[in-house]
Image (cartoon, rainbow, N blue to C red; front, side, top):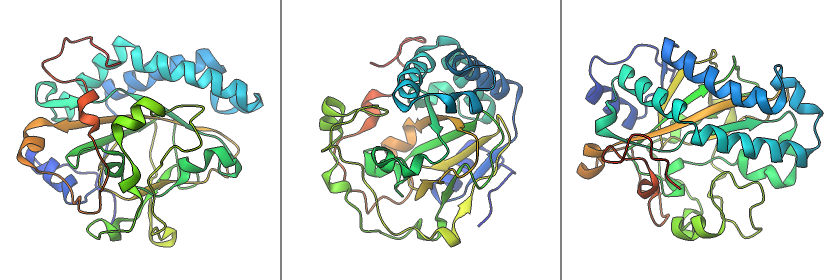
Length: 279
């Protein structure tokens, strides 16, 4: 299956297509470019103008310390939150109909897959195995152009197939209390759901220009590509849930998800104040 570049005529049709397993790549817009520039400003403040290269000269501990601070700055930036809501509305996802997770900055360093502590980053997984709703839609924006050697990939052939995995050991409430997403020093007993059923030779690899928007279901099986290039990869994750779909039980296939709890409790909901940032 290829990544679609033409969107359905209505948002309900787009959401259904995503729940059915379609991948969509949206061209960059004035707002997505502004969003990426706002995120890049934080990254450049931490690592320098040529951040993809300059961050490589740091010791791992120093990189993680700066990156953790940058993640927090991106997450708490009210301008970034406003731009996300504007972008979603432009693409047809009205902010008053969707719950939105905090924005998450991600980085993949060259050779990072060789670091034992970073192994969970490269596990093949569905986001639903981490207690994310089956109606969740992921928005992925690269801060620079990416190709098949420094992005990530989907195994679309197993989208509707139940896969053996260890999501039964994942409890979101326990995870929040003891681990937390993007924790630079997780405890050794932290659970990162995964499966070994990922056929890389059949996978759909993401090729994307800066500030384009990739939309996909939380039920898609995907994994980070091992970065064998000479530059770091930086990207932004946004997650949204249409609340009507959630209440109606709509979403992608979710029969192999055995995780406990729900991340939706920590999303920013339309009823919340405009600038509220979940703790």
